[in-house]
Image (tube, rainbow, N blue to C red; front, side, top):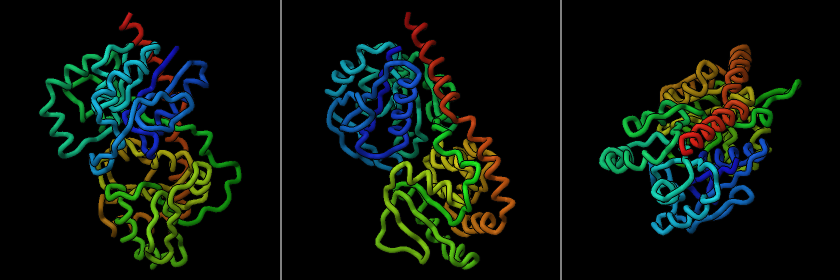
Length: 348
C-alpha cells in the first residue's frame, strides 16, 4: 500500500502532530508499505515531500507552523497523487490540510487531534456549512480521543484511534536502578503549566529538601532553588530522564486533547502527577494522581504524596505499564491499516 501522510504543521518546529506523522510513516515502512510525509517547511522523515513555506501563527493558546499561501493546494495535490490512500492530520487547518480536502485526491483517512478553544471553536461553528461539505471528502474519520472527537461533533462521524508510541523504547529494564527527582517535559508556553509547577516547587522542597526538578523543553535564566532547565534534549536523553525520575509532573492548563508526555511517562513506569483534565484521564485513567488544574498548592500536595510514599509510586508505576499497552505500535497501526482498507474499499 502507498500512503501519503499529510501534516499541516512544518517539521521545523516540534509538536505532537509532527511526532505522530513521523511515527506513522516509520511504522508503515517497517510493515512493508511505501509511505511518505507531506508538509510545509523543511525537515521530517526521509522522503518528505515539502509543499512550500510556513509561518508560525498563534492558535489555541499555542503557536502553529502552518502554510497560509492558498497556492499550496496544487502542490499538495501533486504530492499525494500517486498514493493509494491519504492519511490527513488536522483536516481543517490551513492551508495544507484544507488544500488536501479541496483537491481531487485518493481516498482520505483523516485524524482530528485538537481540542480547540475560544476563537477556533467559534470559527468552526460559523463555518459549519463549509466544513461539513469538506468533511464529505473524508472516507474514514478518526480522532485521537473523545475530547478531540467532541470538537467536530455534528460535522463528521469519527472513531477513536489514540496517539501511539514505540513502547519498547520506554520500557524500564529488569533492574532500572533508583529513581530520584521530579521531571517536567513541555514547551515553554503558558498552557503547558510550567509556571504553576514552579510556583508549587517551594512547597515541594520544604517537604523534601534536596529534591531536584529537571525541566525539559524550556530554558530560563533563573528559577527556584533546585530547578535545572535543560532545554531541548535528544529522544534518548529524554527517555533516560523518564526512566530515572521519581515523579513526572504534567501540570497543563487546558486545550489538550490527548497528552503524549503523560503516555511517555506511563510507558516508562513513572509515577505521574497530572492536571485533572478530561484528556489526561482518558490516557492515564487510574495510573496517575490528579491535581486541580492551575492550582499550585494542590499540585504540590499531589507531588509530595508521591515523593513521600514509595509504595504508592510503585503501585502507580505498575498500573502505568499496564495502561500503556493500549497505545503501542501494534494497536495503533493495526487500527489505521483497517481504516486505510475501508477507505480503499469505499473509493473503489
